[in-house]
Amino acid sequence: MIEEFRLPDLGEGLTESEIVAWHVAVGDTVALNQVIGEVETAKAVVELPSPFAGTVTAITHEPGTTVEVGEVIIAFEVEGPAGASGPDAEAPQKRVPTLVGYGADPESSSRPARRARAFAGAPATTTTTTTVAASAPARLPAVLPAVPPETPPAPSARVQAERPRSTPPVRKLARDMGINLELLAGSGERGLITRGDVVAFAEDQPHGAGTPVAVPASSAGPAQTAGDAAREVRTPIKGVRKFTAAAMVQSAFTAPHVTEFLTVDVTAGMEFLARLRGSRAFADVKLTPLTLAAKAVCIGIARQPSLNSRWDEAAQEIVTMNYVNLGIAAATPRGLIVPNIKDAQALGMHGLAEAIGGLSSTARSGKTPPQDLAGGTFSITNIGVFGIDAGTPILNPGEAGILALGAVRNTPWEYQGGIALRQVMTLSLSFDHRLVDGEQGSRFLADVGAVMADPAMALALS
Image (cartoon, rainbow, N blue to C red):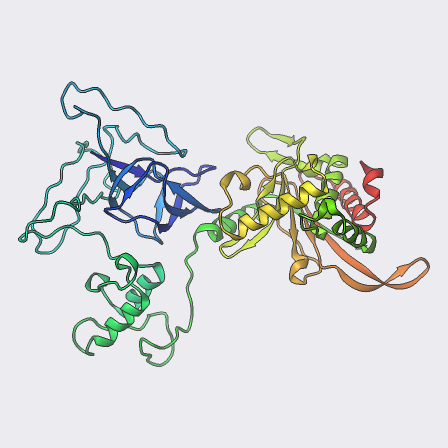
């Protein structure tokens, strides 16, 4: 029997995801919970485990395609229970989903009707599948039934095939050059069509006949050949970038931002970190100014809880959290994400250093799970690593404050009645003025600065 797998809701009510890669192909045999592919939500890349053990019969969306939650993305042929085809057969046992948001029950009568892909001049083929309702929504993609490998097709019949396999950049190149990928034979693994295949095909075509070689319409200036470099690059707005843009616009035009700055002599704080690095107890973690700032923020929030609150518009209430889920902004190849350390207020310097290192490593690999991105209460962004001194950070939506750490610079500074070369840092605090008064924001920033300047102040302020 044929079972369909629909794109699940991978967290926080996200409505769509992009297919990043498939690790299986039509005809492959997969085991239960085997990773079959990867999808990118608005926040992170997530692996998809197979909910069935069986043979892949169809993959309905290629990598690079954006798919709505609930749409069929892959289908399997699985072994049904004995006697399942009889009218009085016992209903098959319901599977237990391994991911949330499976969409419609695959055994439901509301499943969409399957339709085979049409080929010009090809005779119709018939494959037995589970009966479906005729009133199913037409927008859902077709599931392509496949002939089992051990049953070769008759010489006079054309076997249905999956779409040409290629990557999004290769498909774009083919579109720009006016080449139909169905005419190409892929030289890559499992028949993957490569950039070289497209270029070679184009070079083999005589000008004025066959498949035309087209220059992208967006390329301005004199006539170009297919080999010329593009004059501009267009990047689809999707995935993390799309989510970040929407979130920042919502935050900037919903919460009234106030930004304050404080420049601090952090020489003692940097010396404190250096001593800890030389300690055996901290030999297994990386200690940076961000680690000290994380501890300082937790101390400051305990003294000014309004910085750890949120505005509940529906209930017309201000909600103050008695825990700190500390967001750490991370720049990744797919854009900015802000995973958070759960209950950061309960961690010491070693625990914070370990958690920050883990979040950063996972973010760079693109494997941050949705639960690490949800529920943040306050955020830190370290712009100093880029050599920036100060800025006006935008609040992470739903949070009351965000702290930006500037670069630590050797600067002539007043010290003990004279001028000395000291290590100086600027702290930039943005907060939601609906939730935080100027006095509260200023006191919080002063407390954070005091701990950065002299870590011993942590004992006095705690």
